[in-house]
View 1 (spheres, rainbow, N blue to C red):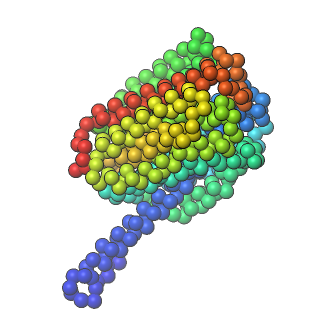
View 2 (tube, one colour):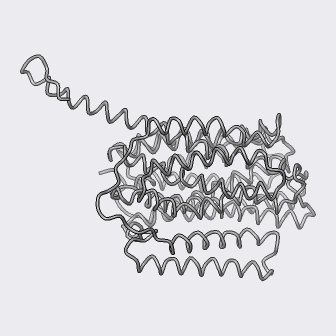
Length: 491
């Protein structure tokens, strides 16, 4: 492959390097394009359903506590499966697991559109969450395999930009489809996109050889304990609203989840090939980055579902209009994510992520005050949501790059799996806590369904308090981002 120039001036010696550079760029573009399409497929589906809760409640004639499960079932199974698939991917191959998951996700989406009742749809959403875990787990790990270390943050920022576009498209698309078609279309739209993602992935994703050495045994005990513990714990948190905190089943589920997760940690500390490698968390600064990512995700998930419901229930807007109201969050996230990639050559992850986390805190504080005020102008809503989205865009890529930096190739899916598990746990917990606070206020006001119109002052207060709770999570993320230590400027 080495080609020499026509003379001895030395210019010909640069040709192989130029060829190598073109090949690196080509591989990076292909990996970024394919994984971004798969990630967008999952995120569009997840975010479009947020605005469909009133329509689903009316279609299946179920109360709010049951309708929550159209969201929560996906989140629970997705979160519980991430660590399992991250380890399997490192052992078997990221490309294989990624493509198998996309095929499954696409097929289950078709079945969801055909669901005859709420129970079947909830079961299918569980299976869909498991399939989506393969995409969530492997996207960042594949990019880390392909991108050179000095370009990783920029690659991640582009991927996050596309994810932001998906989160912007999702609510708008969900509102559009629910308004002019019905909820079935939310799942049918996944099918052609999923087929395209599978075909492109099979053709373009590189085959990264598995790390040499003896094949490690899969941690079955860790997989069972982590999946069951996360699912049971989040289930207990979710049931506080419909069952009440005094119902013995609630503390029993929460305590059982904590016990299972404690047993999981003890098992992981004693085996040679754990599902969760605690050495990854112990690296200085990485543990704080993981924690900051958790609280950032907790806040954003709660804000999106609350604003979407607020616009429909309190402001009496259609699902489509509510989707457009939420859009500034994703739009500013999309614009600021690539900015963080460019700034990463001058400023450290600590600086960029902490600044982003601070903007999220300010945005949630302003939003809480807005939701409690009747007749507040929409331009202020756009401002607060824009601060949250812009802060998240500035925060995410540098924080993720700091987590993945220095991780060996045979642990990249696990490292990203921990991040993704925390991200999804936070989304499930943030959604569950936000809806718990909201449904408590709705119940005290005599409102039983998300399909109802409710402009009672107590309901407005419930929305404001729920957003303020997400703001406390954002503040925790800001503190952890500062606490990671290290320089303010890039070295």
